[in-house]
Length: 246
Length: 250
Image 1: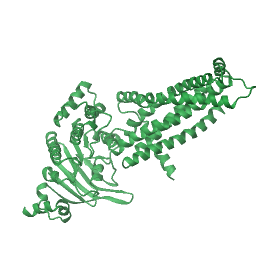
Image 2: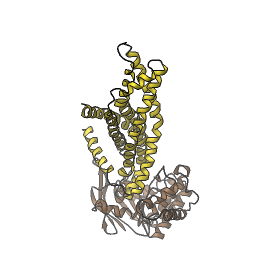
Image 3: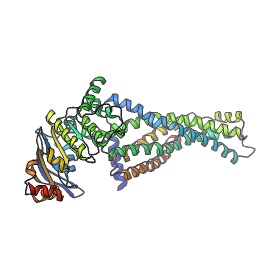
């Protein structure tokens, strides 16, 4: 029953979020600010994590595929497909669910408990739309960029680790990157990232918006936002993979 | 004038407001007083539309606010200014942006005109040279004044104040009270103040409504209150020995 209650309220919340903005000039300036606050500020962590994950993936593949009949360029193929298919979209989204999701939920939750949302409501402003829609749009615009950065940096990390550790030559790795390349994998990854961006921002916005109480509840909302959006990312990853790759 | 007609409100089967009838006059400071938990904040939020009454209606100058569509309510809301207990300034905006916010949202004035109006409102509440400071960089009393400046930015006809003195020292509290009263008279607004501060009651209580256990128990002015024989009101107003002594001497 609790699940159905939240699902119903979430649906109503999303409907309110996607109404026409009050002032387009303010809406567009907010999108710019959110792209910076949610997207640009996440570039650093995405670069660091992607670089090391790409490196580790390559080394683990190398250590597990030490069979003479398997060509060395397989490391390039493995690193590329792992980054393109799963890591850069799903894992980066899970990491951003923690960073961005908790940021959104605690920001909106604090606005709720300090009556800042009531100020908007008294003025007749659709507070759900005013606060959450710019975040949804900003994140949807930034997420594919972050995913592409993650793909590139992860592959560079894999190449560097493989070459420096002496597991593969640069030429073999680059050949592997080009071998049996399926361009659709990039599109698949970008589509997933857009869906995940929507889930992270709306779920975090929902938990923040309906915070009731004080600082303790703001913390609880933030935790719930991260947990629920992470589970939804995993669930939708499964569904989208089945729909798009099966 | 704002009228509350037979307002009832309950949460999870707990009755919070019982058949409240009250009139709040234009051009004077109307006070809702009562103990913590008596229902005065729920009444204020019901009047302003943040809570929907279970039954009854709220009339804004004979316009039935409760029965209006959300679009019609939106028009009335542009005539409302509200000062919240904790000031509720937007943390991410500086002082000037906070005051300018209603103007940015609801007017088509140029940036220069909006800034001019914001500066006028800030000057009206005796605040100058704080435009670029964030709410966290100014004192609680200054935050209240910024919130008042924001509330009057659109020249509202109705001003609601939820415990405007909470957390302020007595001297600053009086400054805020007097400011609200001055502005009310100057702009001929209908001002409703929710308070349990006795200094406010005695200083600016031109029309007072006493709420006890969710029901209206008494109505009168700050002069009437000193001579009331309502037991619940006297227990609330003259709760301290000091106030009891003052009353006995009158």
